[in-house]
Image (tube, rainbow, N blue to C red):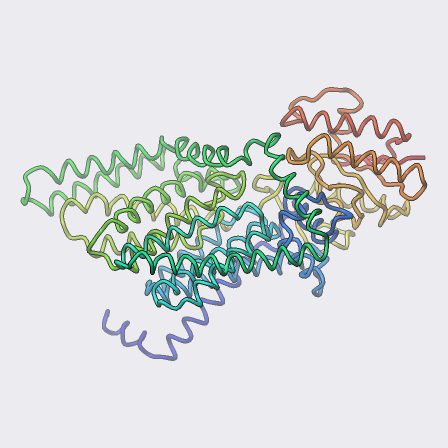
Length: 593
């Protein structure tokens, strides 16, 4: 049977057909939910920034910090149907598809990873992409980071310096996608690690480092040159300076905060980690008894221990079956990270391994620990970017299970297999059911939104669909469509969905948007209202409007600053005579006389 399968696989037409089918699957799978979910938070916020991009609409800090991501989104919106949520979901979803395909081709073509492992690993990675695809400052970051790693690997292994320059250039441009991608300069450690593995002279390692820095500096320099020509270097510098000041209010964006949050996630998962360590320790103890004897019996006992622990994990909820919740994948993914880190570290320090495999292990570890440092999502950022780490884990595990024959390796194999089975099972369920809505998994997303052009063909939960339809109908009936708007609450996507130009930053209650700048924006709008050049509608999430009437917060705000900013907005509305003109279950519209 095995020989027949091998003969079939050697047929070039069969191989070509398999490659085409696998590539098509990688491209289409990330598009499975393009018509499901209407996210008013991150997804809608980024779409609004694409539609209304520029300093006239966006806060300079975030505009410059994510300039290339917003520019890419704006270009995508110029494509057919790009100004609809369904259209932009397709276009941004294809970026996820490209990332998965690039990873798969790199794993098979350069790393010589078995194609089924690379395919399954990247499908699992796509399934774990919990953020909306429209959050381009994340997904473009992952694509350029992955492409940079591929070129860096190729340059180091082949010795061709042009690839090192190109790798540095991609990482340099990635700073334009998201300014915090500066931390990706940490990948330079791979250059030095490979130099040590290959026994290079210090001069040669320094030269490789120089070529990477050359590409990085050229790309970053070209980006700064263009921005200085278009906006002025002072404007850009002021925006980025505010980004550093922002961490005083949003401490989770500080480097120390990002690192502590990352390790806290691993600490929170220690309950499950201890159970896997129990499985490993028990198996090792069994295998140490009577050295060299009864090895088949010892293996059977290890399998029974693994089965018993697996059943206990199932009963304890490790395979959480509510796939609309992050708990379904958090524990299994952290275990994958821990097992992969151990396997990669062992390979890095193994003198018997090839220098290429040791380099790949270094890159896996760097990706795992660099990814969370770009934002405030801690280990969830690493879960969102497993295009290299998931196939890497499966490959390292596969090689360990195939190559290590000693009895003491068997308990480790049991841990690897159990971790892989749980992770892949949960990935399948999560990928099928999870759709991001309001920072959580959406439920009951079966109602198609009617009568809102931007949302044509989209499905969400019934109450949200009715609220959006009601709001759009009111705006159109009262000739408010296209009017400038001030938004507050968890509704920044309304500017995009209702096709209303934002008069100020669409997500005013973000911690990164300080009270000083919020008040300055209101003051500027007030001057325009007084001069008769502007008359924006104010749209609040209904519970925020109720707060202005009653003063009852009841867990509405995540910090004092968000409450202070709403109070500022309330005083602004009172000063200019705003009154409630429409409300439904979710939104309240205020108009000035």
